[in-house]
Length: 258
Ligand code: FES
Image (cartoon, rainbow, N blue to C red):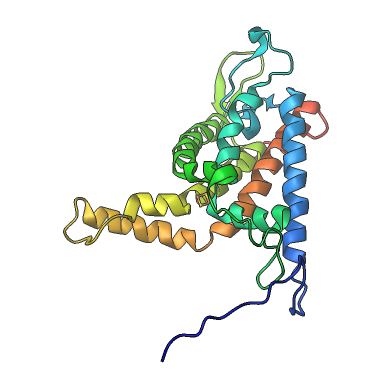
């Protein structure tokens, strides 16, 4: 029997038969992402309160001094933020989130969308999204730097001396939590999953097949929680910056645990 073509009705933007609160997800995404972008932009221009004791804000790491460049408003954060920003902007999960929240294309499943006939996929304006795998390489580099920052956050200056001593402060834990969640986000990446386990017909005969299969299984397990890592790491990186900023401003005191 020949298949009959199914013609779905064209819905106007927001039109739907859904009875649930489908708009809560995109609206929450819109508020959180907008808030993060505004805060990160403010911090990039503030160019202050990013370092205190052994702690360095992740917004300013790696710290590349820009004071001698003679460019007004240029801060170290402006040099490095395009790296992590590009990673999130091209992330497969975040694409879904911002297509729904910002472009409303579509706003949710089975809800009328904007631009029904003008969707071009990852071409034209959105062709940069194909660069995600390269953004991943940059993100992996950033992880090495951020873990080094966590290590440095374990060494506190001895008062009245140039020597340092091992210790753990609340700030150390804040930076470690942030880097742990960023690692979860990076190691659960869809592109990384393809990088370690893709393009293989048979793991048993491929070069490093056993190793690749083990890595692929590990990334696949993390990948199931990619959305969770995406959001928790976003809050963690902003939270780590807020913590360093408040301590640097003297609003709160860091507490030494060890
Ligand atoms: Fe989300 Fe790669 S798919 S970080």
